[in-house]
Length: 547
Image (tube, rainbow, N blue to C red):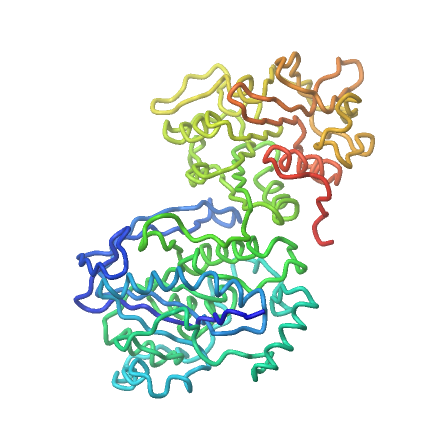
């Protein structure tokens, strides 16, 4: 089979002095000039000091095009990993459109295919670099790889890349290495130049040298740098012209997160999909290195998405202080959902009870997982949740979600909105309180629902409810009880049920969700099954994490 050459090396786009900013939706060749480059930057800020929880924050910025650079990192013609080669070929045409559009708007483009300078010895774009005087203000070690900046010490690196990140099937990888050898390439390092899927114009620059690239930036007065390319967790972060060097040396650097890829093998921790591995690296970057943006801010339309990235988007909304779900749910999400879902976490504002920073993620959510207790929200935030439900999208609730958006005998503060009917309207529930702390809740599956996908592999005799028993009877006729629970001397109550809503959406609710419930594998499997079923993803044959 003929393979497409594709590994694109560190190309850096730099908006030249007197250049122009991208105009949203502009097409290559338009050469439309503008006085400013407007970007939306996504970053993550800790909810409070040392909380280990992060809000997603979007910031509008206006940059001078003459002071801005866009960097594309290490997109080589070939790679030793076949899957990485294929993904590079898929992403390159979109990158090329970004380069053309930026170039037409006055952007200076620097291609930096690392270890490939020999192929460009006589290229005008390479000769242009030699004409740039070496900067007299070179930062220390700007010519060296940077493995970590101090800010990263506050977090834990999210993936295990100790095997180099190869995600090829072993047999395919061996065949690919044989093919590379047959083509006269070193199968361990087959790149010789930048992929031909990216155009290099004579007006561009070519360099893989940190001092040279910094000097070009200094000559053009560059303050803002946008990086795109591969690989996010290696070259994009660590090269002399990478994110870490740019960040620590004072540039306003951002990652174009939809035009990047990660070297990550899903058989290594945290055992998530390849694309979820990239998401985790992007989150790490947004927390500790720099903000990110997406390519449609230059090209218009929608962000790029790999054709094999078919994950649905789960947004987990957490705002309660009783059951520690701000800790248990994110941990659960990585291990139980990372193979088949893209997951966003929304945490309550630690300083303002009735605020959910980052709730904008709900706009493109395929499923909501709600763990909220007695919060009222700004009108715009509540509207996002109502819109999700009105569109017939699925909702899963745990524990306090039955009284998520209603206050108990308290006035609603001005400007905020409640939703006291949320329990009935979304879950078909009827929460009226609980029996208080006491004995474990003994669980029993509904025999008539034993074959429901949510109960696949679940043995209700193998775990118990650790939280107090909720009073929820009677439920709406649209519900189906899957699991019931009982404590001594009290009537039994539904514990897990589904609701087919009038808007056509699927909802699942469970009054389980105590932190000790999450210690029980059967509960984690039950919640995982509920999320898969609600999202319309087959539950059968879901392999436990790490296997």
